[in-house]
Image (cartoon, rainbow, N blue to C red; front, side, top):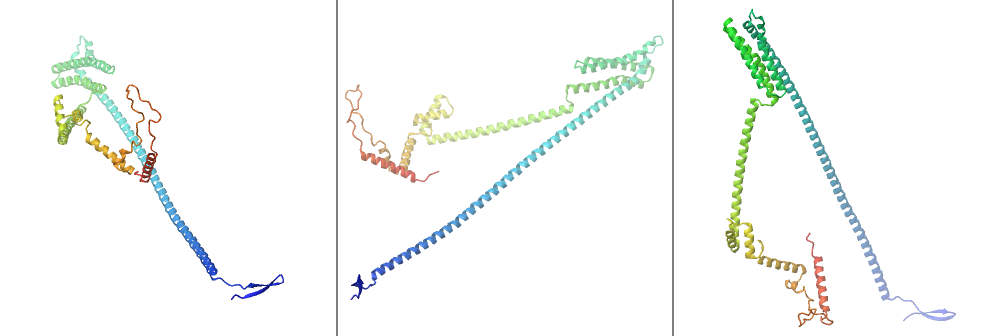
Amino acid sequence: MTAVSVEKVNGTPVASPEPRFDPVALAEAEAIRTRAAADAEAARIKAEGEAEAEKVKAVEETRKQKIANDRAEARAREEQAAREARIAELNRKQAADARAQREETERAERDKRAEQQSQEKAEQTEDSWRFFAIAFAVMCGVVALPVQMAAFWNEKAPWMISAPFMLEGAAWVVLRGAAAAVAAHRPHWHFRLIAWVLAFVAAGVNLWHGLIAFDPATAIGTAVASIAGPGVWDLYEHGRIRKRDGVPTRRERKAAEKAAKEEARQKAAEEKQRAADKKAADEVAAEAAKQLAESREAMFPEVWKHALRIAAALGEATVTEAVWKRAHRDVEGADPAESADIITGRRKAEKRVEAARSGGPVSAVSKTKNTQRAIQTPRSSYKPVPPRRKAGDTPRYSRAAGRAHGDLLRRRQAANNSRPNDN
């Protein structure tokens, strides 16, 4: 029974039931508290998990950033090292170029100094040779003149004592004329010939009078002196003429002949090598042509027979490329490397590739190309009059076919988008 308590309301006693606890409500409240605690725990665990995940993510990001920084630093060091290496290489090349240029300049200076020294030495030798030639000519004149003077001496004609001076002087005057002709680039051979004639006349006088008035030694010595003086001077002039005209010496001629022989030998060897290379190349080309002909005959017997007939008709010794191309077109109907079988196989392969890309069967490719084709105008029985289109001539297009075609296009687009990129 329920206990009843009496309370007064506005002075009137009222009975009210005593409070009691409902177990269901308590259980529901407990369940709510348990769920709330579980939700709070789950939220806490989730928050801790998210915080831990954030921490792990931050650590991972920090690690990745450190790795990226390390790689960037390593790349920067490598770039710096490469830059320094390039700069060092550039400096090395510049130093090498400067050193080579300096060595070239020094070599040019040495060559120039050596050429100057050689030229100075040649000039000194030339001057020395000229001085000794003149001195020798004067000495020869001193030796030859007394015998000539004795030969021309006559008490009745004392003026004849000047004849030896005229003879010797004439030879030297003519030699000076030859030197002037050489300097003026004029003919000089006749001057030198007259000088030699006068020298031999003086030598003859010395030899004749020396044998009569003196002894043979005196005669021969004075005759030689009359020839030797002008002869030595003419040798000097001869060398000067050859130097002026650029006439090579005997050593230079021998060196030039040797160089010409060596060049001819090298040319002959090169010609021989070229001939051998050409022969080898021709043999290789002939072997390749033979192998090509055998391959064509084995793989294309009908075309080869027709090509032989064309070559014989055109007067060709072999089946040329033009003949082969013509024969292939005559037999196969296409250029070489093309035929009906090849073209058919290529088209079939293209259809298979298109079917693989679209995801449908091979036969569907050709069937779905013209699904909405229909006759747009009726045929006219009177042929000269062109048919005219009227309202109602063409049946309406099927909406289902349009939707099916749209679905097919969307599936193809989706398949193309889902397929990985080959690039």
